[in-house]
Image (cartoon, rainbow, N blue to C red; front, side):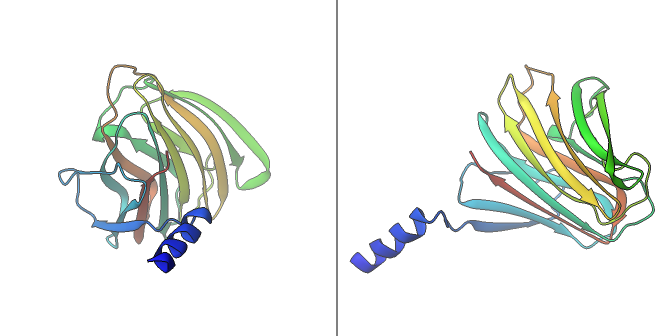
Length: 195
């Protein structure tokens, strides 16, 4: 018994808490599953050529979530990334973003943008053609402060920024749809609760 306790104590003190990965595949919008534990990660994947993933993870209020995504292949477009909460359709201006992105593939000369838009939106490169988009969203889910912090990139650019959902009435219940302009040969998404 003391060996088991010692091993557990060592694991916890080093911060290496193992997470159980729940493979979700590509279930669409109807197969919702709550992610309230810190010890679980939802993993979504598709090998179909598409430019979106419906992330049917149900979130709890007053929590912080992290979304990591990777798209493989898919060149020839300006990579805009947008996360639409609750699979909703929103009018422009419901979200306000501010971000820096490389200009025309030149990381030494970033451009700034601030917009009223219709989702957690970020433009990687202001017009340059790139592929294989990847990034990380940190999502803050409180009723009166629904926000996202983003950093990501692709084969031509990088982007970092924040976005706020200005609706203080609607509850953010499911992560929603993640869309990128580039049709990827494979798209993978990991979701975990961090606070």
